[in-house]
Length: 583
Image 1: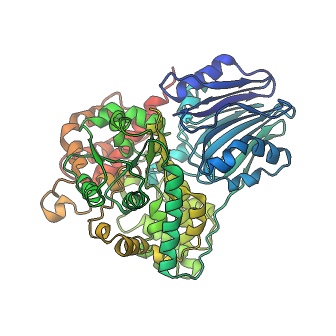
Image 2: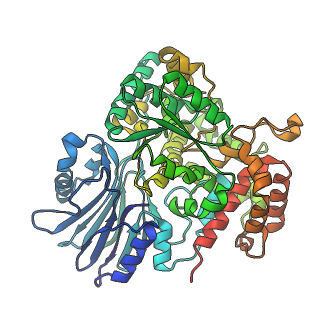
Image 3: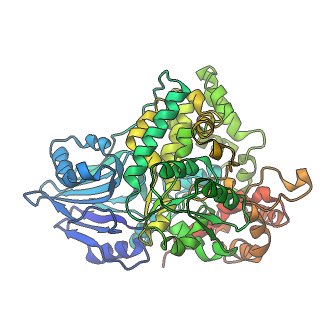
């Protein structure tokens, strides 16, 4: 993917060859990049050239400060022209935390040549990623951890990250797959100089619900979204439309504001998602492009999907990567409903009731929900061949809850969902950026985010607010079936493949829908899965109990689709190990 990259060496001028290796590894496309050289610093920027500020790198009047900015500002007309000057000013006055007021998706790299100081920063959502590796008086950074690993010849797996991934399907906190490469998380500022490395969390969400009616909540969401789509839909744009509620609400608001952009959906030709998305477009009378994916997409796109997203989620999340050439035919900006479930409602009744329990028992109850009653950890732990046992898995869960020391489990869940899980899932949008398409989600408008923190929790239970909005303001949309798989952008393996009603319960297969991916796994690429994961060339055998893995794979290909999520984890892990192989 495009983005910012560089090397700081406080002892000498950084090596030009190493800098070039990082640049070439960021994206397979041979686009030229901007660069700036100083005595102790080399920085660069591979840009899309669509909305990124022109004239980079920026310099102050004394040419002592150098700035690269990756991203976009939603109030471009009133702010973006003054952006470099503003960042230089707040840096010099030690007020960098004021970047929390910038409404947009961005990260930036600033080098102070007089003080030999590097500053890296991410936006409040963490959507524009930055990763870094620190050595003695040395720091390398870039938007892709695998590019850094390859250039620096780092090959070791971070075992804590692996345990997180196998247990939860995500790698969180500042971990990456790679031992020694860390992630700069949402709302953070990194400073590196002679005194060492310092990271400051300049933004923390404040969940402070206020008393309001559900009408107040609905009108606030609609007002914020309309403002967001107006800001973000300029140029030749298209809407990524699933059968879900988040993107269909965007479609309705685009139509209301006479922003006539086409919608596109991708998946199986006869999937439920395609059918529902078509019904939405027919009801709203907007153009709809159906992009069918090939059954063998996984064989062709597994590596690039894992490589370009840092390996945070299964490559199945990126099935749309095979349709990107067609997307370019009708859009250079992609709008998405990602994050919408945080606004329209995403809390389970379990979490809502849990919030009313005495806080002393909350952590125990959350762990019981995670680690018992047939949850996936019961089977996943059998795949691990480390010294980890059930106690170790519980420690992982405890550490997450301790890490997010919020007053209620609802706050904890919102933190994980919005600022950890979704910010990783949004990387799915960057498969578009590799082909010069820009990814935007109006639900990330800063004003709307702040309003969301004030909405009473009870409106978020079981999609109450979303259903209220559809039924009151867009009753036609409310009557169309609502799918829950989250296609296309933020689908997880669990949502994508695992059938809620297993064959062994109904004694028959579910009609073809989104779950036709199960059939793909079971039949079309059955031999490929066996060869990829169970052959003598398999790399995961040094980490996992392969007898158990073979049972899982074999059972899945015999119609036990409950194993599909675990197979997705194995496929991702195997591909990560292949990417990290050193020469």
